[in-house]
Amino acid sequence: MKASKSRDTLIESTIQMGEGAFRDLFDFTPWEWMHVDLTAGQLRALLLFYTKGAVRMSDIASTLGVSTATATGVIDRMVERGIVFRDSDPADRRIVLCRMAPEGEKLVTGLWQAWLSRGEQMLRALDRPKLMAVKGMLEALLEAGEKTREEWAV
Image 1: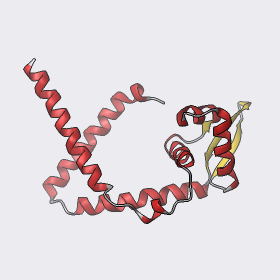
Image 2 (image 1 turned 180 degrees about the vertical axis):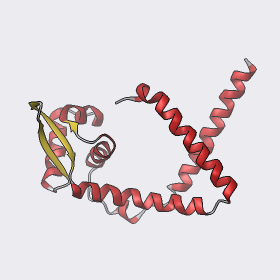
Image 3 (image 1 turned 30 degrees about the vertical axis):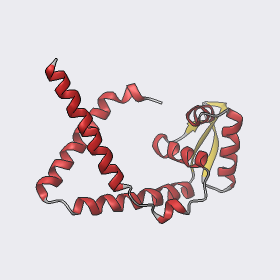
């Protein structure tokens, strides 16, 4: 029982430290994020396409927690702006697939780049042993992510 409690305490303290690190990493509001001309739903849809690629309209609605009609309206405005493409599934023309257009990829890449720059700045402040420790921790997290991916599948 004590080993389990000790492990739980270690996990909890590690999560708290991670939260602090992420707050420091994101403790600034990049110009790109303050000036992006997207609604919250549009930004969430772009991030969905960024991580999943082409997505069915019904899955977009489900992920955004809205009706298919509302999701269609969100996507319509994004298509009009040239940041999303809408295609029919070649295997079943009744299925609508949406994916990021090059302009959408450019937009998302610009948003991520600001955070990546801050992360690089933080890593450069570490000496080699601490940098190796961070790298090892990230490798371990990626491994754990692979092991638990099915539990978190959207």
